[in-house]
Amino acid sequence: MSWLKNAFLDKKTEVVLFSSTAIALYGYDQGMMSLINTNQDYLKTMGISEEDPLVGVIVSVYYLGCAVGAVLASWLGDRNGRKPSIFACLATTCLGNLMMFIAGLGYSPGARTIMFIGRTIMGLGVGGIDAVIPVYSSELNEEGGRGKALAQEFQSNIFGLNMAFAINLFITIALGKQNQWAWRIPIIAMQVYPVLLLSFIYRLPETPRWFIAHEKEDGARDALNDIWGDDEGKSKLEELKLAHEEESSKAVNYIDMIRPSGAQFHPTMITIMGQVNQALTGYGAVSVYGPQIFELLGFG
Image (cartoon, rainbow, N blue to C red):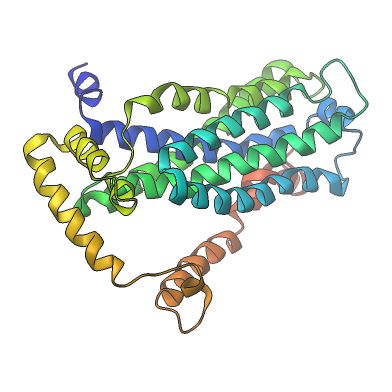
């Protein structure tokens, strides 16, 4: 209990917990559709068969939304602040998830369209969260602790994934594949994440680095004092101002990330290829289509 009490008194711990929960949200959705794709009531409501390519299309439009959402949220985070961007992404996630839940609930015509739209909207939100949260967390952690904080946060991605698998499996065993609630409950259960985060975000500060970048020194001072205390906050403000001056003399834009001669081209390509190679391992196919894969192998 003392650890829990201290966690809610320590802003650095609150930031890590908030960021970890947000990344767990992304993990949950990765595994959410696994058994839903094989639910007979779901397939009937969507007007498709289990082998229909539209099963994969409904899944994949979410990732298209994620790609677009990541770009839009990053732009919004640079322009209006990390917190407003995160708030908008969480609200968007709530809306998309709710649309998925009500798709075909009490009606049939247009159910698939609502599911498509809901998946895309939720992708916009979750993709934005996945893009902005690591930046937000890094900017609120001290230099020596950023790697540890990010590692802890992305471990929660696996927690969210396993949580989705467990809920799907338990509900499917309890209700059966013919029951509509066996696929609707795992969807609406995801609302716990964005609702919890939306109710908690007001406790956290905007990042001092964003304030300094937009010439709002008073805001940066308040944020640093909130996180580190008055004495340490004052020294960190001077460090941040000095770092910003040095970075301003080496301005980097998005073109530098994609132009071969750009200063950030090679780090950007290493990061991108790391993600591509991770995807090529096939973990995405197993997390989304695991039940179908194991059925084809004769295990179901």
